[in-house]
Image (cartoon, rainbow, N blue to C red; front, side, top):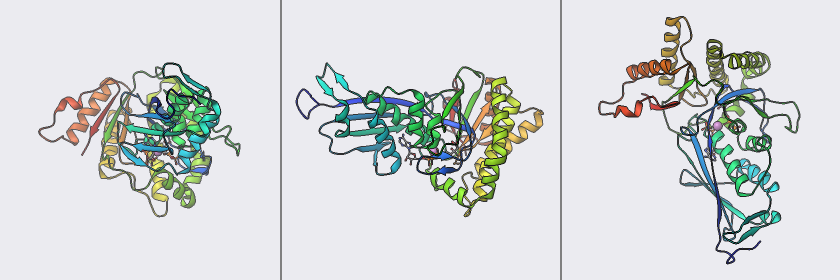
Length: 362
Ligand code: ADP
Ligand code: DP6
Ligand code: CO
């Protein structure tokens, strides 16, 4: 390793990754260490302009240890998940040369160099909007860029999975499936893109931020408790999900919104039923979440066809999917009627964006 003046140099790389929202939920691991799920899952990756993590990684010989800051606050990297990602990327690191700065790092130097990581989420962290998915996908991308890792997306996705399961899907845009796989080493537990971002361009995603507070039970510990105590989880994984996956893949392929919406809502509700079936029960949704479900269900029933799909991850925040701009505008109107903003609110912040709306509801 050489640098212009021994310890003074610093090299940085930045990446941005979007979150993804599951329409068939991943909930339960069969292997905690490798993060292997008990069922397939399917998600839609959001537009990075709206909900994303941005991560900068820096390396310098003056850094004495690996350190990380999340949203400006230092966090511990001692948890196995961060170590897994760092280890796997370091293993694949290559020579890096920055001629302008006169820096030359050789492959093996990476084992003795420490990194500093700073990441920001432009949406609530640990509140059920899949910050761990955006966060770990982004961390892996940023480290791979810094260390000149040339592996394909499939490999990066498997590394991101070892940070947070849902992160393996955020490596790709559009609709993504994480196949659970069967191999004990996880080699066939991989994410694949089912359809590109442009495949179902009419869809609009509306997000109601019911609460941006950090949840009391993390996804990791919540699903561990469910695996240990819920009989419904076993039934869902073995009996319900396989046929749902086939049907929703078909609906996505054929742009069949009614079928897509029916399965999406049913799967969200079953996932939350498992949370209630867990001992002690886990309550991710709150009264406002329930009111939003009722509002959408009533609307869907009154029209005779499905207008909007809803889905809730491990948190109270609602993700609603509308088949087109007009339906999204009507949905927004209804949300504003039932959850009126305070009098002095600047309504321009509620205007329909090109793909998603972040709205504080109730
Ligand atoms: P969420 O529903 O938001 O995914 P989880 O309980 O699954 O909530 O995960 C939250 C955890 O994910 C955080 O406590 C943190 O450890 C990690 N995380 C969130 N955002 C980032 C990020 N940008 N970079 C790295 N890790 C992150
Ligand atoms: C409800 O991927 O956050 O969002 O693998 O333990 O990090 P870990 O869990 P995580 O779980 C996501 C659960 C979910 C459903 C989903 O995204 O499929
Ligand atoms: Co998560």
